Length: 281
Image (cartoon, rainbow, N blue to C red; front, top):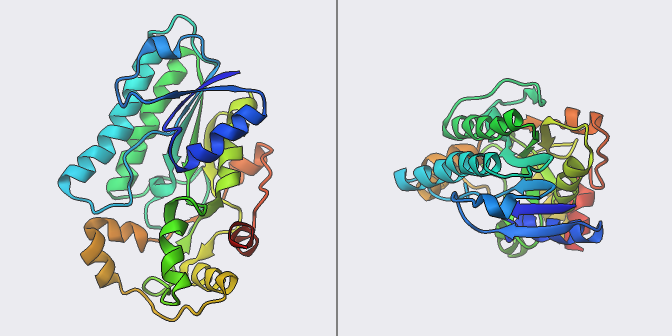
């Protein structure tokens, strides 16, 4: 298949592109922001849409504008371009986020759960709605609500490793909040799965089947690195660093990939300790 990928030079894209090629697909990277040219999409068999402004930054008014525009308006622009193609792709796999669910404590969340409250939940609802417009063009739409992607080369783990290797890591706040994670290899495999499985549509949670509390994650990361983890991070410090976005870092989302597993996807790294060992040893 010829597959157009937006955001393909990012952290997840770096794992995805080699997998597509290994499975015999031709990948075409698109780097046109929210101005996607229809000519670049014409004749593609599939589109994987990963582009978007990073969420992990201080949420100033300008940053929030960029986050929303890149995801909502960027996806709207992509769908408009798809409408203008003479030969449309069969499937659009669009990135989404478990931010959709908001801060939900110990509640078990599946693809059927209702949306939460807050800025990120609102953006994600609009983002998914923009992707759904492609269904009206006869395109199969899959939205993958991604959790914390674990990989040495990017994301949360890359930021934490220097701190934990120095022996000054620790839980965030109480540590009781749930952290829904996925190994970067499983994330890339899930994107390929969504493209190749022609009957899969709708929402898939891109999270491993065994979420961990922040305290459990902290303890297991420290154990794999053979370092102590005795310096908790107070919420006040997070708020000073990230402002409103600190509530997302400290929030709790116990997300289970029920529809993902029911569709037939098999996680290679379902357990946190094994995933961390695979990445770090």
